[in-house]
Image (cartoon, rainbow, N blue to C red; front, side, top):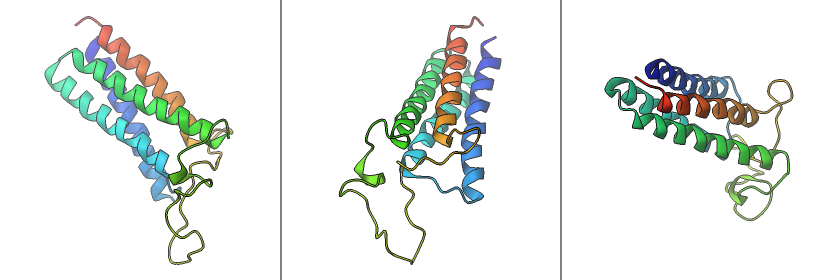
Amino acid sequence: MRSPLILLATLGSVALLGGAFLFQSLGWQPCAMCLWQRWPHAAAIAIGVIALATGWRGLAWLGALAAATTTGIAIFHTGVERGWWEGPASCTGVGPGLGGDLLSTDGPAPVLCDVFTPFLWGLSMANWNAILSALLVVVWVAAARAKG
């Protein structure tokens, strides 16, 4: 029962990461925190592939950790978007850490992490990533606890 769960969790990260790249190709440019959320999904995919190839049960716990990491980043990003707490000065409209010339017309303006952009049913991509990645944590943990 473990292998189907690992496959499901791995494909879940493939879908979320693939969706992020798809929407980026369609013009939805990511902010820095959006990009941070992608790395744990990439790690979960690699972990899932190795776990499926080796059958080593302990890797499912690492998959759960990767999914939990992207969930945590997405929850933090959700709070920044909705103004519940401040985000890093490097990608918000506050503070001296914002890089680049905001008045320049030479290229696209930087995407700020504290701008809430509804995506589907009033939720942003970070909101959806938090929800769906939390579900992936549950699947990874179920895989780690499954027999055989």
